[in-house]
Length: 361
Image (cartoon, rainbow, N blue to C red; front, side):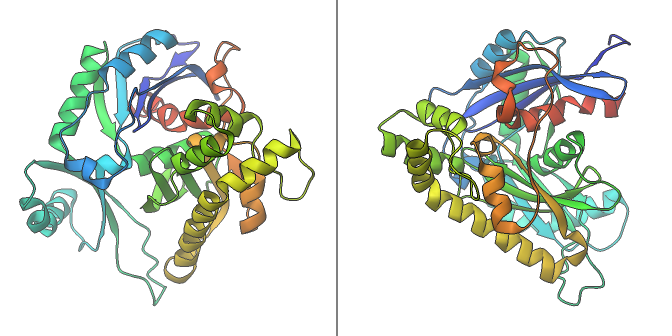
C-alpha cells in the first residue's frame, strides 16, 4: 500500500440485480471512494428464499466487467452475497467459549439442515439482549448460514475475474460498518440501518460498528417500486431508476422541487411499496421499544438502490420523527459519476467490505 494514500481491498457486493465493486482510499482520517463500478445482470436472480439452496449462478462476468470498468488496484477482495442466498436465525445460546457455542449452534440447527442436500457454513455474532426488559424474547445470538456451493462459486468467480477472495461477509455486519464509516452514531448510541435493495430489504439496528438486531423482509423490495414506475410511465426498469433518481417523489412539507406532475405521478406509483417499507420500519421500532429498549435508535440510515430515490429521506423522516440520512461517501475524484449524490448509497456495502483491509492490517 502507498503509505501516503492507503487503498482498501476491492469490496464485491453481489446482488440479485447487479454487482457493485468499490475501493476506498484513506489519507489520515479522510476516507473516500477511490473506485466504484456497478454492472447489472442480463437477468435478475430470483427474489425467492429458495435461491439459498438452488444451484449457484456465476457472477464472474459481472465482477470482471466491473473490475475492468472501474480500473481497480490490487487483487485482494472481500465479498458479500444477497440476503436471500443466506439463512438468518436468532437463537438463545448458553454461555461458553467460541468453540463451545459454535458446537451448540450446530447441534441446534442439525435437524433443520440435515434434510438439505448441501453442506451449510455459518457464523454467529452476539446480540444485545436487554436483560432488564421483562418482555425480552431471550435470543442472544444471530446466526447467518450459507450453502457451501454458493461460497465456492463466489470464490471461483473472483479468481476467474482476477481477484483473490479472502472472506465472504454477512450483510448485517457490512451494514453496521457502513454506518460507522459514514459517521453514524457511536458511544453506545444506536441507529436503524435500512438496506432497501432490489430484491431484499434488510433492517438492522447498529451501533459502534456492530449489528444488534436484524430482520430481512421481502414484501417491500425496491424492485416493486421500479416496476410500478415503469408501468406508470411506460418505460424500462433502467429508465424508471433514472426517473426515481432525478425526479423522485414530492417532498412531504414543501412544493415539488422537480417536475411537479412527474413527482406527483411517481409518488402515486411507489406509494404501496413505500407504505410497505414504512410499515416494516414501524414494526421494527415497536419491537425494539417492547423487547430491546436499550436499542432505541437516534437516527435512520438508508442505503441500497431505494436510497437513491430523490426526496425519500425527508419523506421517511416525516413518518418516524427521527432524522433520516442517505448513506454517502465523498469521491476521491470527479471521475465516478456512478457514485455521485444519492447514488453513493448503492456502494455502501461494497465500501464497507473494502474497509476491512485496515482492520486486517
